[in-house]
Image 1 (cartoon, rainbow, N blue to C red):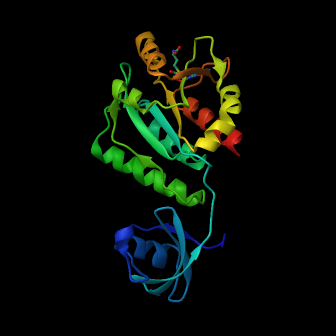
Image 2: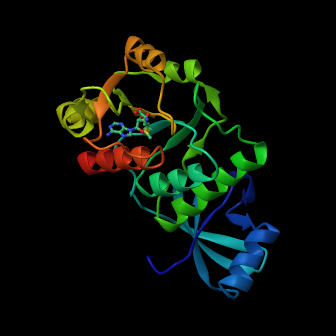
Length: 240
Ligand code: SAM
């Protein structure tokens, strides 16, 4: 199936074993990929993969379910104090490739970006494209931006805050220690990272008080866009 093109389809487009393609999807399949009637592609709906055949440029028939499992064993939630400019786009792209299931943009004290609704829509499209290209079954959710204090309510038994200048245990060691507990409980892993200027001492303390464990990603200071990618890489390395 690897050679077949994948396309994310919204559940509302499925009806009675057929898929009604949008004008944009029709253009993509027929004009860009040059698929013809009778050609097949993979339709991804809510994490399920379906083999679909084009009947007309605007209509496809669902042939069969395709068993596929490229997802990490547990969900990974990234709470990211937004970096400046378009940098979050790179974070979404790379971390989607690495298996993150949910991005939560956070407005912390030193966050400079105040994203417009258009920007959030763009992030969602990037997540969708990255999920398609990395052959994932799940398109990660990108939540609406929330305040720093709101983001602390995501805490669970496996929540880590990346701290650049405090003596903290490496994230890798923490994950290895709790790996079997995480897998048995099927609990989410939650990771929080700061913006360019870092989190304030009070913000870091508030996270510790809420139950986040402070973790290090190494001796060097990573950019705000690099830290979540490194954290997500460590999570996927340990889980897989
Ligand atoms: N001047 C800031 C400071 O000293 O905290 C630098 C912040 S860094 C550019 C942005 C974020 O990346 C930090 O808030 C932290 O979450 C994460 N980060 C960067 N390097 C890290 C490291 N070596 N270990 C853990 N987290 C790190």
